Length: 294
Length: 191
Image (cartoon, rainbow over all chains, first blue to last red; front, side):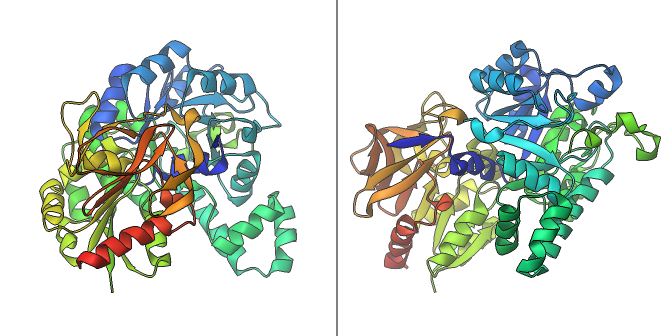
């Protein structure tokens, strides 16, 4: 007998991506550049986050033509984004054979109260989180992989750093708590109690946690690995740079050898201009994607 | 004490390290080729075979791993590791390390939605092994020197050729250490 879509198979898929870089792509040509550079997966999108920001309006699941084109172009796994709470977009992506769905705040939420019940699906999901409560709620709903929310499309690492540090510091606090303190903590952060007990016992999340949202340079990727990320998502950074192939390869190598600073210095030479980037204080509240749906 | 290295360029390194330690052997993450001199056996973990191959090339690992193999030191590949060890890959002109006389098909069971767990009989190791297959390959052809250890629906999913062991599934994702213990015994026999 065999079982598909088990937690072990869904979480295990993300374990296999560890130490790797997942790159946003908008067509087959970019997908091939990403695969060639050593990406462990690609995220098929209609627009990268910085262009979503620039375009404004409602951002939705990509046209299936694009997703299909990318699925056919590469042999590495293909991920795609569905709007938060948009059960049907997620089912459509699952039916197309996408390998992982990102229920993503980069798109305009379809439901401002509820996330998708991801346990119902055979395909695994990744979700964003800024703190342990958010991480635990997403796992409770069935997410098999997490990533920091960061602030997508800004080329500014500060929010991804904040979210990675926040989750880890809360895990450290939790592991130091006595059992009778955990229920109140669960209430305060809105996290499932049993899951917190499990995290407290293991000293880590039961799923991998990648860094995402603002990674623009090889050093940014290495910094997130240094801070304990299991791997890296790069959105606008690569294909908004002037030499995407070289840039992509540099980010992959910096992620693998994140403590080899001489190598990172070499990798960072003559990469051309990185994306311009946005300072957080200049972002209006309604432009902050990370605040969409908790 | 027996020391097992896990190639730590990308993939499920942590799980293998934990499993090796659970079996009472020493475990080392291998990030530089020079480290191969310090170990008795090598594990090529699951991950993305395309990515791992690029990183193997970037850091000049191909020849050092082949030298390691030529000394008769055991190597165990899981999933992507199995692909790296094959002499031929369906639909690709070139193979990677070419250590086992077999042809493998990548993602042979389908995309992630087809990934599954199943109970397997593995010759001489277990008759109830919970095997986790994730976008897994299978073996389509083997040479006469290759011993088939397990099949699933007539597809070959575990093989051994002398000091080389390979599985299409991920023993490192469960707490069942029988397969790894078998590999460690292989290592102890030659070292």
